[in-house]
Length: 361
Image 1 (cartoon, rainbow, N blue to C red):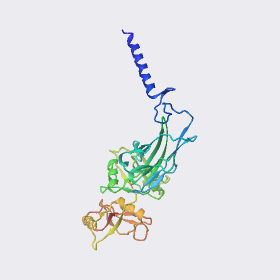
Image 2 (cartoon, rainbow, N blue to C red; image 1 turned 45 degrees about the vertical axis):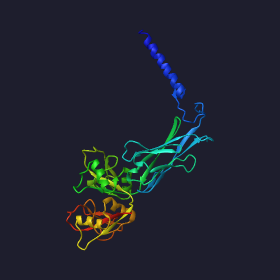
Image 3 (cartoon, one colour; image 1 turned 60 degrees about the horizontal axis):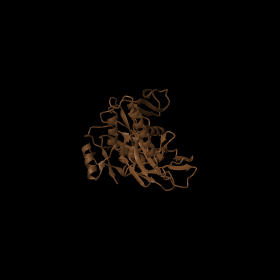
Image 4 (tube, rainbow, N blue to C red; image 1 turned 180 degrees about the vertical axis):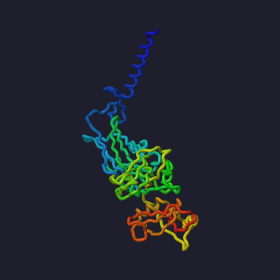
């Protein structure tokens, strides 16, 4: 009886293997599942045909609220005369380098989208082999790397393409002062100002455009960095070359810095209101509401300055309690000789200034 047990296990294993071979086919040590590309007899083509998936090398640029098309095409070599049944999967690696998540899967004319992309994405099939991804109503956090994968039976090929938004990066610290934000509160602070934590690529582009800031701030990937165009002793050393200074990855809960926020285009516009004797903070909010608008956020003021050329040499309240003004054309008595958004910090709420309001279209 003891010797019969191994024999029984062997018989069961052979029966299981026979079932698997009958169910899905077995060849050269690999199981193959017929997904409709065979000849109807559960035979898989082995004819040396290779699947190619292609896209552009350059990133796709867009602005918030617009649509973007991420190109992707597939072809066979040699070319096939009979269409094959393929499955397409688009996935996304966020700018914060988190987990790759599904965006859309499609089989034939059927498709399904996921998460925040639901209802905003579709495939463009304007020519044979095209499976480009169209994303509508772009959001600030849609930036990142997208993967287009085409699956044909057991063979699959994929390519990646980056989506970047055009916008403006600005340093941000709360009213409590310098270095009070951990990673989570930095994310929240940017979101409250109609923006998002900047990516390294966005900060690098801002540095190339002349951004110089000596306070370290969080980025979307959890690193802490700051841009220097004019090296000096207090900012990494006077002998160092210009560039992005990095503290590397920091503890997201226990370490505290400022934030670098990123804002893109607006669906509305920002404008200035004033009263003869100025407005305190409460009055500033009320006068915007009375004009069927809201007091503008910092990210909205920066976006209006960058995208709409807002130029005003008058200090005004913003939603976070700060007082700022935008200068597109530098001139005497309006701050430094470079364009930018000037800041008076966070004065007491009883001080009197104008106000910047925002109204959406």
